[in-house]
Image (cartoon, rainbow, N blue to C red; front, side, top):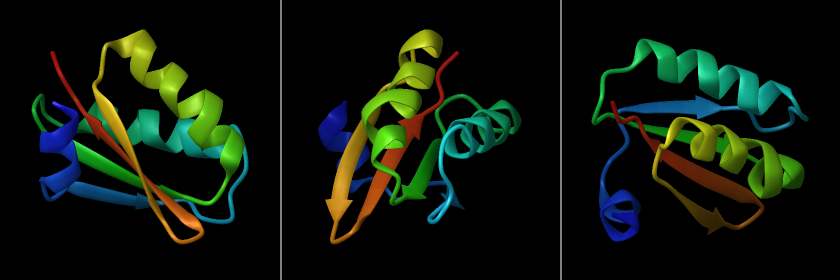
Length: 83
């Protein structure tokens, strides 16, 4: 699943660079609620705690597979909505 998420083009992109917790998680959660099952959301963030703690926590609590791609100073946090 993680390999598929790495190569698949995201359906939606959410740019929260410059925002700190809990903004990335709240905005990602709001966006995911509007998306259909099977769609992929890519969250662009430069906030380390969002990558280490809050976004993984959001995914685990909802059972969403995710992958983290580091691109320079930015993280591409890809989440697949399931269910």
